[in-house]
Length: 609
Image (cartoon, rainbow, N blue to C red; front, side, top):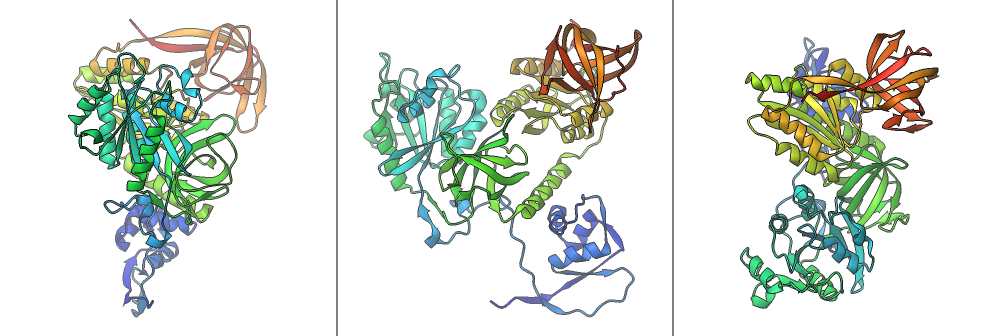
C-alpha cells in the first residue's frame, strides 16, 4: 500500500527543553512522549530536560522536524507519514458489544471457546459447596464462616467440552470482587438458598450480572432442607424481571442440592444450552490476552498471579504486561498445581515471574520482549505518579487531624492503603470510605504488597497517612517515613482500623498519646552486614519487642538515639516480635552505631483514655 504523503511539520525549540514543554511543542501528551523516550533508552520524568539531539530523535518518531532556535530554516520536504504507534493494552475502549480481547480480530480467526461461568450470591447460600459438589471434592466443607475471600477458578468436563467456573465472595463487603467476576464471565449463575430466599447480596449480584450484559441462570440451592420453598424464590426474582422459563420467561431456574447432588446434571445442561445460544469466541493463535483474578506474594515463590486467558495462548517464558507490572512467565501451574507449558482461551492458571503484585481485574497482554514491557510499564508508572502527586504539604497524623477538625480546618483525610492481597484490599477500602462524614476519607492509592518508599513519598507529598493491613513497610519506606514524618499505621484486624479512623473523623480520638514501654533488649554483639550497616545481636531481657514499635537507644542510662525498626530477625527469618529470653538481630532505620552493652528500649504510643 502506498504511503500517504504529507508536509512534515517543523518546530523550533531551544538547545535544552523540559519534557512537558517538548510535548506541547510536538502536540502530543506528556505520557505518550515519555513512552517514546523510554523506547529509545532515555529514562526521564515529565519535569526533566532533554537536549536537542534527544528531542530530535523522538520528534522524528511522531513526524515532526525540529530546528534549533535562531538557526537557518531548512527546506521543507514531502515525506511519508510514519505509522502511528499502536495503542497500549487497555488504553482504547472496545466498541459496544465487542469484548476488548476481540477488537480488531479477523472473523476467520475466531473459534468457539469454553464458556466462563461466574457463580455469585449471598453468603452461606452454598456457592462454593455447589462448585465442590460439581467437582466431586469436599474442600468447601472446611471454610471458615462460609466466606470465600479469594477468587478461585476451576474447570469441569461436560458434553465433550469444558466449562470454567469462577467462584466469587458472597459477603456484602466484597461487592467489588463480585463486580470483577461479572466482568470476566460469559454466564452468571446466581445461587439462592431455597430456605432463605432473595437477600440484598442476591440483588447486588444480579445487578452486577445485568450490568455486564451476561445471561443469568438461577440455581435454587438447599432444596433438600425441610424449609425449602423454591416457588417463593421464583416469585421474588420474577418481581425484578427474572421470570422463570416455566412461567413463560427466559431465565432458567434449576433446583439443586450441593449436599445430595440433586439437580447438578440439570444445571450443567442449562449452562451448555445457554453457551450454545450465546457462544463465546477467541483467537487461540494470537499472543495471550486476559484478566487477573488474584495477585499475592508467596514467601517462597515471590509474586504469584491467578489469571484467566480470554483469547490467544499463553506459553511458559512469554513476556506479559499487566498494569504497571511486567515479567517473563517463569513457571505456570494448572488448577490442580500441576506444571503446564501453555494455556489457551478460558483456561485459568497460576503464574510466577511478575515484577509486582498485579491488581485483580486488571487486563494482561503478552508483548514481544522485555524491552517493550519495561517501556510500557515505565510510561504508565510516570503517568500514575504525575496524576497522584498534585499537592505538597506537611504530612498529618491522626491526632493532628483531630486538632484541625476541632478548629474547623480539616475537611479531608488522605490515605494511602496497602494490603496483603487484592481480596483484602477491596473490603478495607470500602470500609474506610464508609467512615466519611463531615470530614471525607480520600483514598489516594490502594494496592496490595508491602509498604514501599514510593507509598511514603506519595503520602508526604499529599498530606496523607499510610495504612498497612497485614503488611509492613520495607527498610527504605521506614527510613523515608522517619525523614519525612509520615505516619504509618499497621493493622491486622479491620475493626480496629475502622475504629481508629472513625474516632479521628468524628472527633472522638483523644489528641493526647502516652508512650508505653513494651520490651527491652541488650546488645551483646555488633555485626556489619553489606548494604544494611550494623546489626545489633541482642538478647531480649524483658517484655516483648516488636517490629512496628519505636526504639530508644540507651547508653550509660542516657538516651543517645531514637529510631524506627528496620529489621527484626531470628536467625535468618524475619519476625514481627521476639519475647523475653530469646536472642535476635535488630536493625534500626536511622541508627547503627551500636556498642555492646547498649540497651534498646521498645515503646509504642497509645491513646490516653
